Amino acid sequence: MRSERYRNISCATVGGFEAVLRDGKAVDVRGEATRELLGRGTLIERPDERFPFLPGRLGDPFALVAETLWVLAGRNDIEWLGHYLPRAAAYADNGRVWRAGYGPRLRNWNGVDQLMEVYRLLEADRTSRRGVMSLFDPATDFGNSKDIPCNNWLSWLIRDDELLLNVAVRSNDAMWGFSGINAFEWSVLQEVLASWLGVKAGPVYFLASSFHLYERGDHLKRAADVVAHFPRRTPYELGVETPRFAVPPAQFDRALADWFAAEERIRLDPDASLEIAITDPFLLAALRTVRLKWGAAVWDVDRLRDELSACPDDDFTAAAYERLARPARQLLSDIPQPACRRYFQTVQSEKTPMITLKTAIDRLHRKKNAAYGGAWKRRGERVSILPNIARKIDRLAHFQNTSLEIEGETRLDTAIDLFVYVLKYELFLAQDSPRLAAALGLAGAPRSYSDFDDDFTTALDLSTVDQSGDENDSVELAAAVELFEELWPRVDSGESLEAKAAGAAQLRRHAERLVSAIAKAHPSAADAFVRTWDAS
Image 1 (cartoon, rainbow, N blue to C red):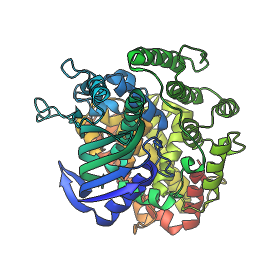
Image 2 (image 1 turned 180 degrees about the horizontal axis):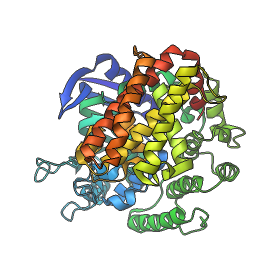
Image 3 (image 1 turned 180 degrees about the vertical axis):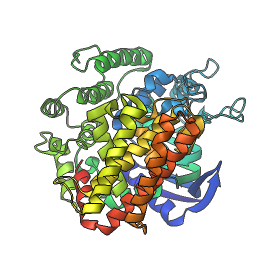
């Protein structure tokens, strides 16, 4: 077993990625190829520096805040969490609740509120070693379920006026578990308990039996990109602080209920007033942050800039700037908060590698999906979906026959559009077939997969599109044309869903190889496309 010490979650994430990429062993678990370290220990010295600032990782601070408060409130309902984690239902056996959600297990395990019990125990005996919270339930968790708790045991100690936390984890996905939610949620739980006990939140130690990265899609490449892009500093080193939690135990549940009521008002109307009963600095910062999420969907960029400019100079604001500036880079100019401004100026001055071609395609899709929504499929397969694909196929054939391109659209642009449309068609078909959904890396209750950015990203992760393919673009285009000529009559003749899906999958494979071949043959066009979305 090897243990490493890091300042905060950003540094710990990069160190974990580096370790897995360097020393991880290949192992297949339930059909999933992973790169794994056994018995990895990670000590985070400053857990309250809880927001991960990792260029290239594309995390969501709004989801971190929402899921954490949802857990603290003892909830496990998917309907509310789905507003912030659209794919939450994929990990629920019944699509309605997380069977093993941490919230009920922490706050109401057969009538026991473990948070309050540990508080009372440590308040009565500051040297106790019995402050334990259990999350794994032997009575139910040996069964077959999508939802078996990965974090199993929390142990609390007070030493030298610091509240220490040890977390035992059976299975830790380094990308979306450890740095995605676990370190954040437990750091907030630790701050709550420390504030009640009148001590400082000390270091947190994670022991993961299996610490791993999945090999599906581009997880390994994404991890390597995060390591390469990390500027080795975060906003916290540059003076950004975090608002402190200060609600006493007797008022805790009432304060959370008030927060969720205020969140609903703001989610439905981002212009609703923040002049409400919530005065706790931490909860108010959390509410202000989720308001920015919902406001960003309806405000123009000038209004969004004004709202961000009015926020305090804290880590919630820095995290909101980082997330909201991905599609609106201009938000990072003239930041009025001094500490936030220092961080983003520092990051912008670093010379970092560009994003990958696949990441650029994902960002293109997210931008177009936000702008056009379901227009591409509104009138069904015959009138909307297949004609969109046909236009791209025919335009590529014309490019090849004439060697001419129109101004503002290269062959690569058109090939990427073709690939995106075909992949979205597969997602459209998969909503009626769990088997087809599973082939695209999707699970859970059926839904309109083609409407969700995250579902597109999941399917895109499984593709092989990059700039290093050995395929011949002429051969791949000819194959794509031939396959499409076989595919579209299947819709007119009413062939089975399986037959259409098989044709779409073949067409998508040729489209992704076509993109790769053109990108390799025309690196300047590929670099220009990536640069366009590198700033997004």
